[in-house]
Length: 500
Image (cartoon, rainbow, N blue to C red; front, side, top):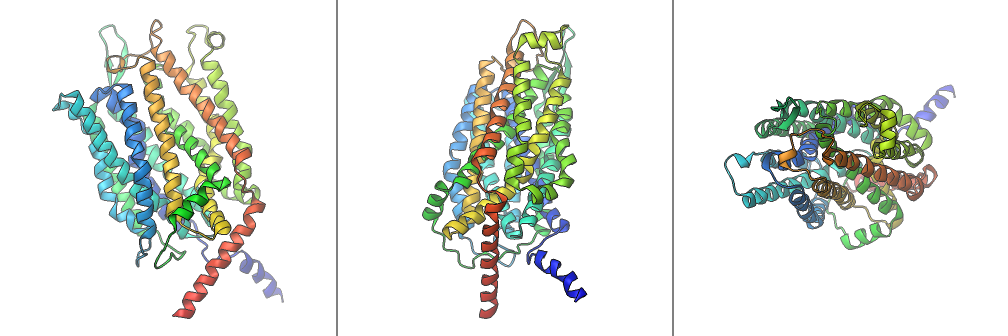
């Protein structure tokens, strides 16, 4: 009797597709490869286009808008291709890590070729920017949709999915951290002007060399991720997907609409963080601050990471994101008010009347603690939405859901890049002032400070409102969903075994 009592809890708690840290590491490695090229493109392609190639902010912003409109067609096409593909012995989604790794690495490299060294036609340079970025966007989608879908077939255990989402954030931190910490040291030249002013200028040759290294690293890590992941949840052998019903179901789904809108804001803000490069260079006059900014962004994740699975298990994903993300909203609104109030700046820094960089960094750190709960659980939330759609409609299509969610994130990135670059033109930023730091008589750097503080205040507030009041899937509402999916998978496995 004693032995039976000790075994019972294990039998109840053990999930048939339970995974551990070892299995999650393979997914982490793939995400790290993803972020090597994505972070470099997201953070420094704008600087490359404006400061090296010499494309104006308005033209670059239009390019980002137009090229990503192609994603309205590109993302559903990739989603359909991935969804209709029959699983092989290697799985349904894993093979894409091998197939797309090479062209994606090449597309990253082509974006940073300093064409202005041998091409002097502004029209041709702009055309090359369009072509190379469209190529990159298509290849990135071809990788991201199957990679995101892979999480839902590695395991259907709720705890395992939280583990995957958490470890994906670790991989994101590794890949993104490498770029954010090392790139500013390598790609900027420190120059002293005739008047003694120290400025930093982007070096096109060094940007290309660093891009080549990141492309190679992403290639190695994708192939490494392919070797170290496994699809445990079976996919349909002959998938027949009703895409019309699937997409109509998503449009009627409050959980998905909320997650998609949150995805627009989350990815938009992550993309908008790249404009801090202009802030460090032109307002604080120190590009090395980007290294400290990266530490402030990632330190909360490192601190909270060990506690995240237990916190999610105890309180729930919706509950944590909704209640704790208000910290980010309050901190972002506070710094926006202080940074754009001359009276407040005169009180804080009477000698210069400017925002001291330590205050900005402390704010980034506080924002990071609130935002960590959203960033560490966002992919697990998407997996929950996939299960919820199957529970409500009987339809399951990971690739279709991830295609729409990926598009929402790209849409957020498009808004961030387009708006930010248009605002740089509003601030009268161009190649001629790219290497000039703060000048009291010139309000360009002050406007850059406004751009980099007001927009995040709006976005973080929106994320909190959506997760607190919009997203409906509480712990209680997910319990029958998990039970339904688990029973359906067990029945499918039993039917397959009986057929054999």
